[in-house]
Amino acid sequence: MTDISTDHGTIVVEQMINIPVSRAYSAFADPKERVRWGAPSDTAAFIYDAVDFRVGGMDLIRCGAKDDPRYRVEVRYINIVDERRVVWTETIRDPDKLLATNITTLEFMPHGQRTRLKVTVQVTSFVGVSMIQNTKAGQEGSLGSMARYLER
Image (cartoon, rainbow, N blue to C red):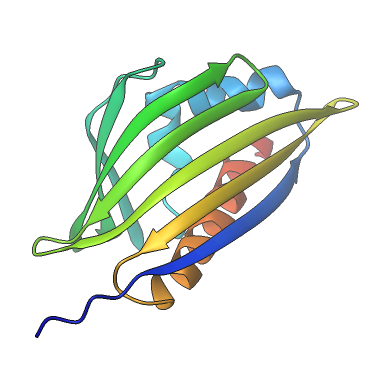
């Protein structure tokens, strides 16, 4: 009998960036920029196979280790409020199985000339709680990469 695992978690990650909201939002909305900072570490790959940043649009992404971007992510944009909020669902797979389905909200909050980013991810993992922990580490890494990219 196949193990049927379902684990749920809510992750909240915040990052303060020393740039205005308009610049932070444009770095997210532009896939050419997003690919420059989207990977959570220097050893990870973040590759777009398709991009459609609009409500109802879909992105197809490959990610994982640079030498093995085996994970496939399908993103569907649910809600976009320019310079304030982006909400999307994502389904994450490895070549052989479904790993997780998430709903993610990214909020852009002005803080003077700085921007506070807040990511909330509601994770449904089909492979155990480690997927929830990996999702949190990935979000922390990506926001950190975004800050380094924009503040250089």
